[in-house]
Length: 215
Image (cartoon, rainbow, N blue to C red; front, side):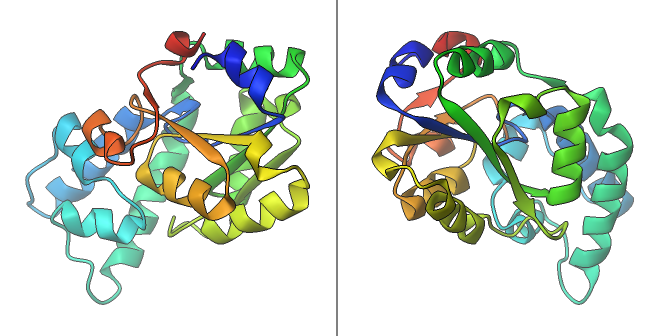
């Protein structure tokens, strides 16, 4: 399926942000490795990171070998976010993503973002990259713990007031696929983000390797 075919079949596109439009995978890998090293634990390779990353993020921390008992998860979450916030604007958007956003806009396909990112930071980052004009709504979480965006997604699809069969979601994790099922919309997944192609393929949905491929 190409972006052109998508524009003929659907009226609205819901995008994930981190790892789908924003290329922050290396940054996130570096930060979690800093947290691991600080606790005398072995760092993750990029391949291992993409194998163990999952939602809710607390499960990913546990799979990475971190102790999440007591208030450890909260402490590590703040460590992660503080480091991420200081470096997030050094990231770039994936090649081809701007062209797809532009193609959909030119075809009068409305677009939105549904993210596990905190709402304020989501808005700030998208504005920094001058992409806010492409989206009719940005939907983030009200905290930093990246647990789930399912409820926000179900609420948004009701507000959107478009037949779910005419909506498609772009994401880079199995959680995106799970959220799309709850919303009743189609989904395609991007293997260049936070989970490996092998992990994503288990969903049975279409997996694309690059935005340029869709073009």
